[in-house]
Image 1 (spheres, rainbow, N blue to C red):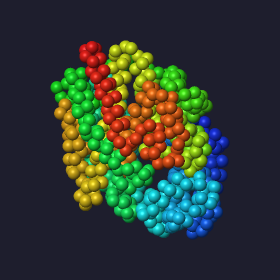
Image 2: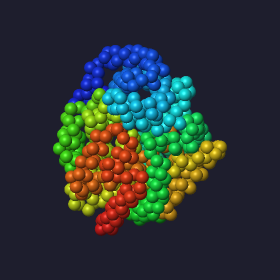
Image 3: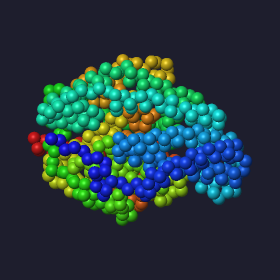
Length: 602
C-alpha cells in the first residue's frame, strides 16, 4: 500500500511556515482587506494633483505606495495560505478576493504614470531637487519618465488596466486545460504498476532507467496534447496577439522591445544570448552523442535525454542533513549571509513536507514586510538539496533587499532574481565535487550539472528563439496554426540537439505544453541568469574578498538601479558575450571530466 499524504493539520508545526508573523489570524487579514479596499477608493482624490507642486507629488507617491505595500501584504498571506492547501475553500476564496482587489487597485491608481509623464522634465527635476522625500524616488521617477513616449493617457491606461482579466483569459484557459481538464491516461511504472499520468508523474517517468517506461510516458503524454493541438494553438495565438497589441498601442516596435523595456534591458542582451548559444551548439551535440554512446543505443530518442547516465549514488539527504549541508556551502558567502540562512532554517520560514492539496514544486515568496518564505515538497534526494539551496538564494536575496532598500526599491527584477538562486546551485556543485572522490559519485554530480546547464541555457534559449518566432509571425499577419507551430518547432529542436538525436514526431508538439510561453519574453532570463551565476560563483570561490563584497552588494541593491547596471557592479557585464563564453568553458571542462570518468567506469 502506498503511503498516503497527510492532511494539512497532520503536518508537524515545526515543518510548516509560520504565517502568524504576517497576520496573527484570518480576522486580522479581513480587517486589512477592508482597509485596503477603502484606501483604494480614497486614492481617486489624488487624480489630477500630482503635477501641482513638489509637496503634492511627494504626498501622492507616499500614499499610493503605502496602499500597494498594504495590498501586497494581504495578497501574499492569502496566496501562501491557499498554496499550503488548495482544497481549503476559505483560502480559495481569500486568494480570489485578493486577486480581484489587486486588479481593482491597479485600475484605481492607473492615473499615476500618465500624470508623472505629464510633468515637464525640467519641472520634475526641480521638484525632486527641492524635496528631500522626492529624492528617494529619483530612480523610480527616472525609470518611469524613460518610457514617456510609451504611456497613454490616464483614461486609456485605466481602460487597459481594467481589462487585465480579459487580456489574461487565454493564459487562464491554457492553465485550466493543462492543469485540470486534460484527460491523461493510465501508464505502467518500472514495477508494472498502473499509474495515472500527470505533469508531475511524467517528470518522474521520463527519468526512469526503464526505457519502455520513458517511451510510453512520452508517447502517451503527446498523444493527449496532439488531440488538443488546435485548441492549444488558438490559446497561444490569442495570447501572442495580446502581447503584440499591447506593444503596438504603447508605441513599441515589437513585443520583445516592450517586454525588455519594462526592466530597461537592451535587446542586444537577448540577441547576444541567442548568438552565443547557437555558436556553442556543437558542445550540446557532443553531450547528446555521449549520452547515446553511454546508454548503448542505436537510436537516441527525445525520451532518452533525462535518464541519468550513471546509477544513483548513495547521496540521499534527510531534511535535517540537507539543512546542515546548506549551512556548510553558504559559509563561503560570509558570516552575515550564513546567519540569515540559519535564521530561515530554524525560525519556520520554510514549509517543508508535502501534504494533501499543497501546491507542487518549490518557490520563494513573501514581500517587504514579511519573512521571505520557502515552499518545498521534500524528498530525501540530491535534487531536493539543490532545490533548497536554490530557493534559499532567492530568500536571502529578498532579505538583503528588504533590509537595505526603501519599499519603492524593495523588490528586484526577474532578470537578476535567478542569478542569486543559481549562484547558490553553482556553489553547491563546486562543494560536492570537492567533497566527493568516488568516480561514480563524481560522474553523477557532473551529469546532474550538465543536465541542468542543458535544460537552462540551451533549452531555455531554444524556447526564447521559438517565442521570438511566434511573435514575429503574428506581427506579419501569419496565422499561428498548430501545423505552422509544429513545423517550426520540430526544425528548431533538430538544430539544437544535433545529428545524434532521432527527432521524434511528438516533440514538434512540445510548444503546446510549455506554460512559460504565456509569460511574455520571460524564459531568456533563465539562460542569462544561469550563465551569469556561473561567472559569479567562480569569482566567489576563486576570486578576491572584494568579489564577494560586490556580490553581497548586488543582493542588497533591490531595484535601486537598472538590472544591467546592478550586475555590472556585481562583476558581470551582460551586454557583452564574455560571461556566456565563460559559462560554456565551464560546461566544456565538466564535460571533459565526465567523458573520462565514464570511460573509466565502463
